[in-house]
Image (cartoon, rainbow, N blue to C red; front, side, top):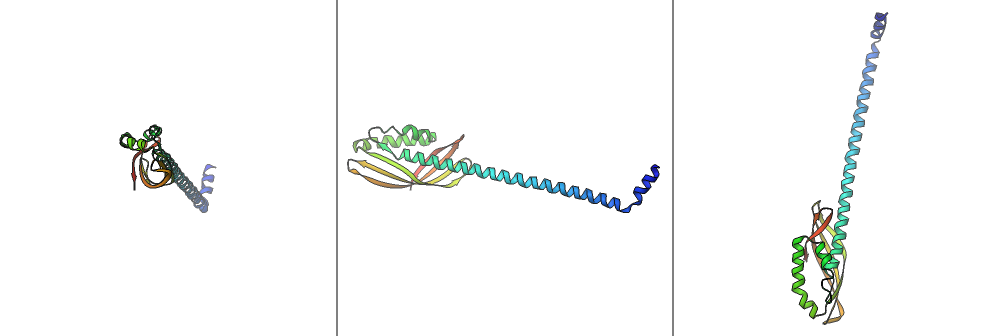
Length: 177
């Protein structure tokens, strides 16, 4: 009887073709599933990278806006009020440079009874990667002193270089353009 079963199975010429077609169909389906998963994974990873880049961009803009507002604001009665904020947001090198600038201007600002408030209204990222960023900012500064008691408005364009330190940005340089 076993020979009859074997004979009957081999007598049907279409069965091998059907079995081969089903195997080919399964292989094709498996390949499509693998390709679909690969494309979805690549897309997911790309979206994740872009969201991280967007988050870092927002952090860079917020850091620059707050930093420039603090750096460009002062009161002759307490010139050290913003010093801690500015130096905490600076690289060690730029923190020393800022300290030197404040020391050089201290007598002039105190004698002139200078007071300034500033806002960084427009801040834009020029370039950014995971370690550095360059931003352009427009800073409006309102200054009063003995020569301009009613106040004087100053506008500055600034180029800010940031460096990534851990999970935050530090200011490495500020140039007035």
